[in-house]
Length: 267
Image (cartoon, rainbow, N blue to C red; front, side, top):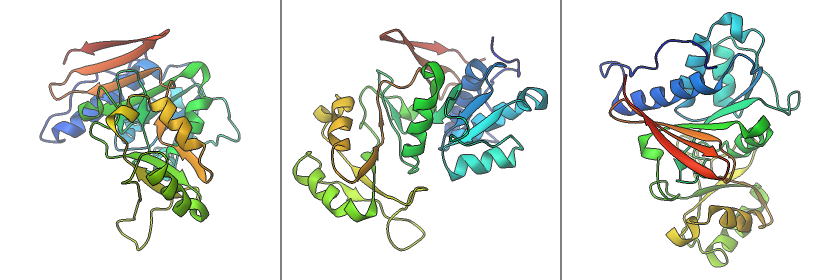
């Protein structure tokens, strides 16, 4: 049964923008439905929606959270866990996770998603695969809900070892059909973005046709020597929650081999 934490009502526009309200609504609803009393090992993902996930978990109360441990996917989620005075754990200690809630850059009609805008997709995928019974849940605002991946997000994030980045770029340009693949450069430092694992990130746009079969594309990219992980998460998520502009929440959930979509109206 969902934990009683009060209604997941939209926040007033005077406090948050429409997009931030949408993120918070998606996060609150997902936590209410999926972070249950018997869940003791919980993965906390990365991205701009995740602070609202942690906020809602804290609202479940000290009594419920004192017996839990929280596994971060990166620096951001680690800091959120510590700042919220929740118990910090590591995937080395807890390789089997009850449930992970994570953000997404885009989610398609089959619950495949692009992740890696924050360069955390290697650790995010490790936690997603460690979640028991595929309890891997995505939260995002309405802009991330698409029919096909690549609709709005500019490219597939690819984590590569620094030694091999030039060769991987060459292979993406000439062998895999991504002539505009580029090394991601940092905004507030000279040089490239460096992941929490000490690796570089390549952003590789692909054609609409290639993105319609993300699993095949992911497999082809992973075969390139020097690639550590690909920001395509295929056949992994159990559900995705999208906060909408009107205060409703769209939920995509997997029922056996079918993805069902429903909308919870604004309260």
